[in-house]
Amino acid sequence: MDVLVVGGGGREHALIRKIKENPRVRTLYALPGNGGIAQDAVCVPIAATDIDAMVAFAREKAIDFAVVAPDDPLALGAVDALHAAGIRCFGPEKAAARIESSKSFAKALMRAHHIPTAAWAVFDREEDALAHVRAGRFPVVIKADGLALGKGVVIAQDLGEAENALRAMMREGAFGRSGRRVVVEEFLTGPEVSVLAFTDGNTVRPMVASMDHKRALDGDRGPNTGGMGVIAPNPFYTPDIAERCMREIFEPTVRALREMGCPFKGCLYFGLMLTADGPKVIEYNCRFGDPEAQAVLALLQSDLLTILEAVEDERLAEAEVRFSRDASCCVMIVSGGYPGAYAKGVPVHIDPLPEDVCLLHSGTAEKDGGLVTAGGRVLGVVATAPTLSQAVRRAYDAAPCVRFDGAFYRRDIGRRAQEA
Image 1 (cartoon, rainbow, N blue to C red):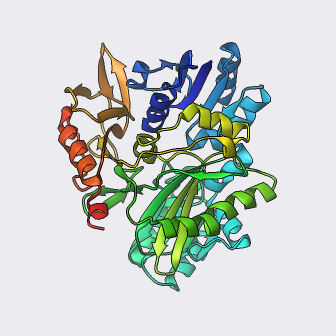
Image 2 (cartoon, one colour):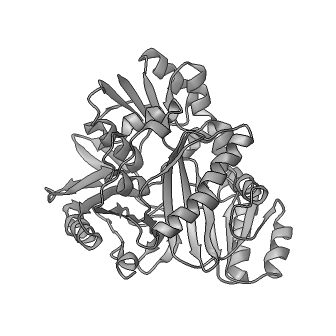
């Protein structure tokens, strides 16, 4: 069969590597892909957000199955358009993708269905948001309502930081239309957990829990990024907590979307905080996290394509979803200046890698027969091992194999988890 994966980052590279394991795959296309993905799939120079061109290509090539991975095309209705063209695919339709594309929609869903989350308020006017934060407590969390590449969240420690964040989002347009409306939340404390779950709108099959590291610098300092590294499994996510999350969060969320007439079929991401009052939802994503997917899929033992097809066909209850008991660690090698301004087109050199380590390309391109940087997050070093400490050590032993001017990475991915 011919398979199309929409997207061009490390998450898509991880998906492609796993999908390739299925012997039924004849040709694997990536739209648009990147310099490293080109080694594993046929890259197609069409933007992931060009829905019309995507559908035309899928029709031309008689694609048997498509996987829409990034948030933007999902929010734009890529799956709806592919379905209308008669193409089976994995991913939620536009109405269900609102659970990520509109934080106010997600919050209203949680309120209506008694799903635990932080106290919150929504604002369309800067002056109203300012009045709210001035009357509240700090720190406070300010979020752009729409999609912002994982960067539209500010934890304001004081009034000055809150004023700056609201001005940047609502007045200066730091995130375009996504920041015209903001959600202001109470600040929660506790270990953070990311749980990706397959769901066909009825059955929920959670994957191995992971721990993302969002801040740019060691010690969880610096600005938020799209993710600097991930470990899995998350040691704070105990079987008792997992059972409680299934009962209080996962199943109620999927049931709520189904009852609203927009059943969610795809990968539903639950960003959780394990507070003293129990697990609470920080955010939903309507797709595999990046770089969570890189660490989690490294542990998947069942056939990924079979699972994706079962989701589309609403047969997930019959599918095998099995993960290794090993641990994994993903360390992101990023461009100097990220998540701010950074150079592109910098030559990348990769030395031979140790065993049990792979490289997943996030922001690379081919140029003159070699690789150059093409994004802020450039490569993910992914290692697996029987224990978390071994996986972390293997990833960091391999990180120096990636070399380019300005390259940097956090040196403490997994440290908090190992101290648990």
